[in-house]
Length: 64
Image (cartoon, rainbow, N blue to C red; front, top):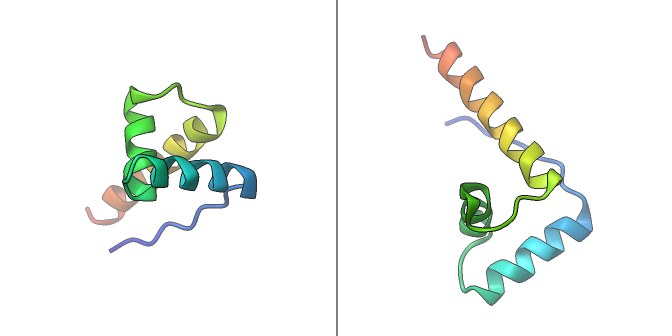
């Protein structure tokens, strides 16, 4: 399994964690819902999505 380490500023993390708690979902699920377009994506989340996609592409390229 590939491990991805992300650097997220503290206010954004707190905002996402608070929203996840409010919606009774995990932080991961909150991020997934936002990234799938259920919420207006912030520039931070768009950057996160780009990083996750790049990591996935790198993982796939390495396993070939």
